[in-house]
Length: 419
Ligand code: URA
Image 1 (cartoon, rainbow, N blue to C red):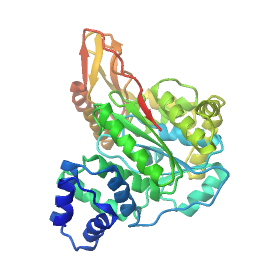
Image 2: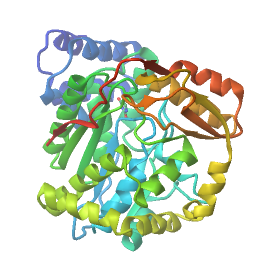
Image 3: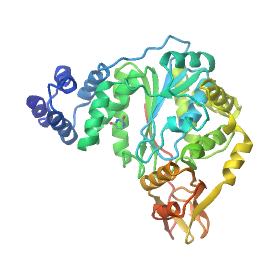
């Protein structure tokens, strides 16, 4: 291992054999945690060439099985987000893409840190199953065009072991390590067409656009060298993407978008869905975007989400107008602006963590009706709490919003697109 670490420090190429030796040596117990940590730390400090990041991804991928689906008219599509607040795009993108005739099969995770997980959102539909075998998921795709299932525990065992060690040893933040971790799991889960949503800003892993772009370029490069069709967007995470924050509020937000509600959640979901459709069908960007928009505006995507939920055993209660009204009647607390002014920044990490703690204590979730750049009048809501609310939750939200007198420029929704 010393020779490998020395090469990392000297920025010399590692090659597949050395990377195999490091990763497989750790998995088989030949190298200790301390030795592997020293390797990971060297990569964090000195980086790794893109060629080696591609090879590291291949090595990680070969530690487990790669799913392979039966051929269909169009290739399987999937999307991945690096994690954001109020991001329910999967619930909008999956039915749009499926309505356009492109099969969509996604393996998703649960809540992580201050961000929500797609599986937790899906489980808001009473009875919906996500622990579904790949064979059953493929049958669901046969019938309704899309399925979203919980990520198998066996997916990329090397990533499972390395991610745990990185988390314990503060060696998570390295572009080649993040890229190989994310992309190996995407490659193992079988999709052939992928759009990555790399969030950047106060509520994201990558705080600057430049960092986000570097990560996005590397991930797209690794995916392409594995023969996939791939693209990435660098999107803003200085404001919650939608308005609903937390389980059921995010699901209701997604359903509202499928019913025609506008805003940033709709725009980003449509953009990603359009890109997936154009890549999967080999259409121009404009034609893909038009098909996606048509699927959304015609109501086809709303019906498709109902079909997906039903196929996975979920109740359709949340689609009823009456249920939405009932939820909205349960507003029990609010944080309001103390003075007139512009929203200068939102501490999304704190907001996401407060929302998560609130849900864990039995609350239903929040609506955050403001974005950076919005003007608010004294007394207007910054956050509305639904379900079992408590004054402590409102108090905990207090430091999350910075309001200033001078106008603040809103952030763009999409900073860059990498193809
Ligand atoms: N998410 C992952 O799956 N891997 C990383 O390394 C970081 C975030």
